Every structure is written in structure tokens, then in C-alpha cells.
Amino acid sequence: MNKSSRFPNKIEQSIIERCARTIRILHIESFIFAILLNIIFWYLTYLSFYENFFLGVLLLFFDIVLAFYTLAIWITIKDAKVKPTYLINSEKGQWKILLKGTNARDMEYSSEVDGKRITLITPDMITIPKKGETVNIEYEYVAIFNSPPLYGYNNIFISINNNKFTEKHKTYINKLKPLGLLSIILSIAFCVLFTFCVIIEFKDSSFSYASLALSFIFIRTVVVLIHNKQLTSNLMKKK
Image (cartoon, rainbow, N blue to C red):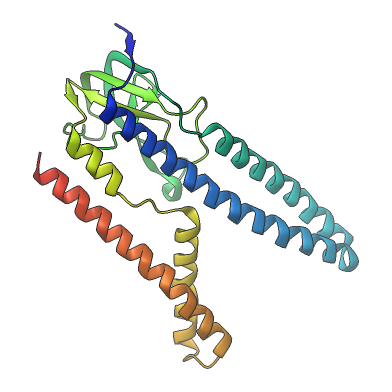
């Protein structure tokens, strides 16, 4: 396996920085959500000790786990700062798409080259291998962070078989709108709450107002998803 390295050009540097910022924003939103959960559950734990000592101990254990999880997010945020430059590695290897997970609910597709997980962020660069198919490629990739983040990706393809980033890819990445964990959770909460309001025929004003407030986040999430899908469709047409 031949290996070499180089520094990115201006287009590549811009795309890498954008990816780094997007993943950092995702973790910042997750950190805010985790802090809110910490406040809620520590308060519930405090109340539980007055009602049921055993329940209080169980919640305390959960609080400690949640606190460590929050700390892990904070460490990732500190590590996810944009660097002045990055090191692009050039290699040859076997690329395949694997389906990973322990059950049907957490199954996800994983893009891997010789056991190394590398994400293709511009789908027009090359035809993606079918599930289980192995393709020999010459590729360049970059590790955005010093260690893998909790969410998102770390290694991304910079080129495959000499298909490199161009100005259109820079425009595509810059126009993509990231969706944070908080937006997704609140959109799901809207769907659940709105369904409940329909069942009770909107007779509870507090639930109705809460549903109305969350509807704006849900609408924004749908608009962002449509926007990103259209951008990807336009990129593939220019292929």
C-alpha cells in the first residue's frame, strides 16, 4: 500500500473547514441539550431522595453517566476547532459499503477502506459501491479532528481515482444547511404532541400552544431537508 501526504489547496481547505464547523455546531447543540437534561434529572434526583431512596440512587447513577456523557461532548467541542491547515493522506485500498449495527433499529451504512471509515461528502465524485461490493481505488483523505467525534464523521475523501474537489463542490458544501440534534428531537416532539392534540381535539390549550411553538422548528427542519435534497440533486445533474 503506497502512502504519501500533502497540504490542501484553497478549495480543499475551505471544504474541510466547513465540515469541521458543521460538526462542531452539531456538538454544541448536543451539549446545550445535555446540560438541560442534567439540570432536569439532578432536580428529579433531589426530589426522589425525599420520596424513595432506592429510586433516588438509581437516578443518581443515571445522572453520573449523563454527566460523563456531557463531559465527552465538551471535550469533542474543544478538539473540533478549525486548524490553520490539514494533512491530506494518499493511499490505495479496497472500498466497500457495510451495513453495521446490532439490530434493525440501529443499522447504518458505513463507508470503509481497508477497515478505515471514510465518508464521501460529495456524492458525484464517484459511483458508490453496492452493498457488499468491493472496489479498488486510489484515494486521498483527511482526518478532520485529532480523535473521532461523538457525532458525524472524522475522515473524509478528498479525491477518488483522481476525481478531486472543484469550485462546484465548495459551493455545494457551503450551501448545505446542517441539521442539529436539537432540531431533530424537537421536530419529533412536535409530531408526537400534535398527534396527541388531534386525539384530544385540541381541548387542552397548553398542549396546543406548545404544539404551535414547536411547529415552527418542524417546518424549518422540513424546509432544510428539502433544500439539501435539491442541492444534492442539482449537483448530481452537473456530474
